[in-house]
Amino acid sequence: MTTTSVPTTAALALGDDALVLSHRLGEWAGHAPVLEEEVALANIALDLLGQARVLLSLAGDEDELAYLREERAFTNLQLVEQPNGDFAHTIARQLYFSTYQHLLYAELAAADGPFAPLAAKAVKEVAYHRDHAEQWTLRLGDGTDASHERMQRACETLWRFTGEMFRPVAGLDADWPGMESTWVEAVGDVLRRATLTVPEGPRSGAWAAGAGRQGLHTESFGRMLAEMQHLHRSHPGASW
Image (cartoon, rainbow, N blue to C red; front, side, top):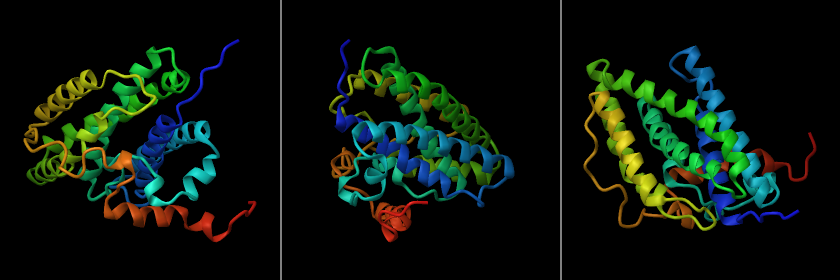
């Protein structure tokens, strides 16, 4: 029987994406606009946390990797660490990321690689995440003048972070140009159906392209990480 080694770089990248976005979505607990959305966001956060646990455990001790690494050691996309902002901002972030993640996991699930078992299960979860984001984008974009304006502003604000998603990751055998083309088409279709204008600006800044994967993060990430790691670091070695 042969075993397939797991590329640590790829496991960390995907695991960090899921972990960080899970924490961001968890910040909505007690603050979502309606009770039903409180449950929906919590469920998406738990799905992502489950993915993160599997992925980080492939690279080492999941708790140590989550709670004891310094900021520069995290290789998550800058998109997922962006603050929640208002509800439209959260939905735009979710639309961009879940569309990408769904395309990536579909490819990984179809391939005979070390991430295939995880991807085969996760792609079903992410299909729901993507649909949830699409439905809210349509609802907000084609809603009131205020909701339309907020959704448009959120899409434009986060657009520059989307190019990083399609920079190749070592150990992930995927058709990155093909995925990017499909992503642009799919997201553009949702935005147009929501009566929103597809942002025209660059999808990566001169310094931001690939920065998250290189351990370079935005200012808000440090504060989020300190909050996420505080309890574990305050009681090292504690057993609950």
